[in-house]
Image (cartoon, rainbow over all chains, first blue to last red; front, side, top):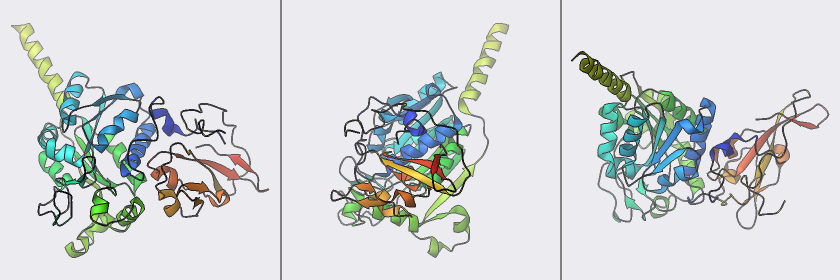
Length: 280
Length: 102
């Protein structure tokens, strides 16, 4: 019965950290962490070649448990720190873990500019539609009409479409998965990790503790079931009418293209400058 | 096994897997839930397609029907606490099992 070493997942966790993890029972962030571990395990990358950077929020706790090079940075600045790290160590696989508020509100500018530069970072945006850790304030991805502690009569803002925003800003790999479809999610993360350039994976999660409670959506099990029933693949969505697609989560790869990666372009510039200096 | 030891941190390499032997009949799984890591969210109990789990009085999962497990790995993939390990085993013609590894 004691074949724990066969389970490859535990090789990527820090053994001296306190488990169980800090997230609420049933939180989807744990499922995203599992998906990320499986993706990295399939790629067979060395733990030392991977750097994980996170900001503040529930998702910010993830690198604490992972046995890679990790940075837990200030709110919204995960991509800023990750950009610096990638510039200094271009060979390092840099993964930025952010929540929806972290990536799009506090770090919104970092997000679009990292996408514009096409720097080789994998940004995983865990979207739970709310600021869960601080008590359920509405976030840039809270759906219109949903309740939040700071929107007790319903949110009147439009939510940010994360994938469309990333595509428009210039990211070269954009995908969305849900935590219910966890195996699909780890395939998407794997593709994002090997992509050369800025890749974004929106992992649609849920927050049953704040968002679910205030909107009466039930437990983690209920919210997972909701995801199962209300998400469609991109292929299926293409055959559906806009009315049918109302309120549905579309999963899949939305955008993939090849453009020069930022650190590679920067290395070329350095080479040119050095050559010019040698001539002079 | 005492409660203190029942976590992946406490138990490292115990034994190495023997080479798979025997004719493959059907996929079976051996299920273990690390009680120290499980927070009792109930996801495994609610979604297991073979109803392997039952809920105890604290709302935590008990592996009640391990013989029904088909090693689909739904539970260990979706466990937010990474507290479930499902090991693939193969059932021989005579009903005995051998480990299939991961």
